[in-house]
Amino acid sequence: MNLEINQRNYPSKFNKPVVVICLDGSQKEYLDMASESKLTPNLDKIINEGEFILAHSAIPSFTNPNNISIVTGQPSAVHGICGNFFYTPSTGEEVMMNDPQYLRSPTIFQKFYEQGAKIAVITAKDKLRSLLGNGLKFDENRAICFSSEKSDQATLELNGIEKVNDWLQTPVPEVYSQELSEFVMKAGVKILNEYQPDIMYLSTTDFIQHKYEPGHEIANKFYSMFDHYIGLLNEKDISLVVTADHGMKAKTNSSGEPNAIFLEDFLKEKFPQDNFKVILPITDPYVVHHGSLGSFAMIYAENQELISKAIEEIKNIHEIEEVLNKQEACKIYHLPEDRSGDIVCMSSESFAIGSTKSKHDLSSLKEPLRSHGGLHEREVPFIINSSNLDVTTLGQIYNYDAFYYAAHMANK
Image 1 (spheres, rainbow, N blue to C red):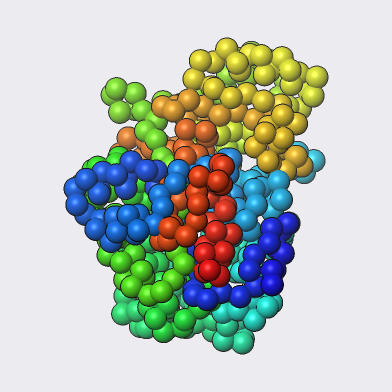
Image 2 (cartoon, one colour):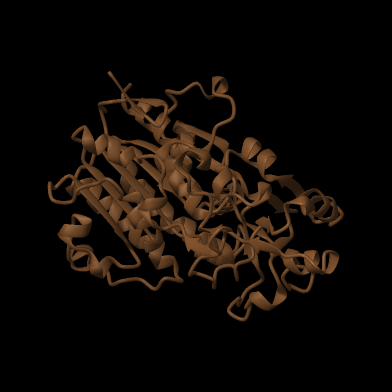
């Protein structure tokens, strides 16, 4: 018997718990380098006994749209979350997309909860919690949803759990720390053992990946930590998929300074009498990570007749690799037209995009800029703890296929 969720069919019952992990910011090289240093024996075992595929993330390759793609099984054109925030030209408002009112489709959690399943969701940053927990009820002892960041504020009424820090014997972690992600993993192991959910989703943060390149001692320490907890999870008979929301690339010159193209400044120079607004959907409250510089930008033109001319001018910028009008971008990358700019741009592997120099405070960047959002950060791991799947027949896999395959493997 199947359950249809957002035009995809899932088995309505599982023979084992379904566990999906979004290992934020993790491109393949991080796992490879940690493995070469013999720091990930548990993950290596899972890969040897299962599958390791390279998947694509949703575009833009940012946290919010990809987490929501993973938990709905569809790209932004379906669920509506196409950035960390968006712009409404008619009102001039720039709005954070962390409110469930912007969701246009139910999560997989909501639909399975309605069928009687037990759900557990743990995220590092609280900005995702209300989106991930949308549609769940916390008064029936069948749903838990909380963040590491605000674990001390969790209540039975709003999160399905209370006194989390006492229960886990771990204080609230610093937001900008490895411990924020470790809290997620540690809680996941304890919840799997004690709560025994039918579906569990764990979502970490990319603080480490923004600061350190693959193979760096501190990055390797992070993946060694992750390996410890993944080993504890995999001791149980679970159907497991580990993927990521995006990769991460260095965006600096040889001196370690940010490589940034300030598109609004550029357009002002080319069209001094006209107004263009550059929106950077990577923008969120955690600017220490990236200074609001990413590889993806949307441009809104006050004079619609200038869109084609602006596109031609931007195409002359060598380090902007993709320049499309709204209709082309939405068709190719499955974006919602009413929440997309008139022009969509993506930069090269080593460059980021800004709006104006004056709008970006980079003083909080202590290490060379590493960021994401475009095509060069869309390749992500897709690790399955089972070989019961003939991956050669699947074609291109996306990170938002994670629950689909984990659920079907749990039904074998």
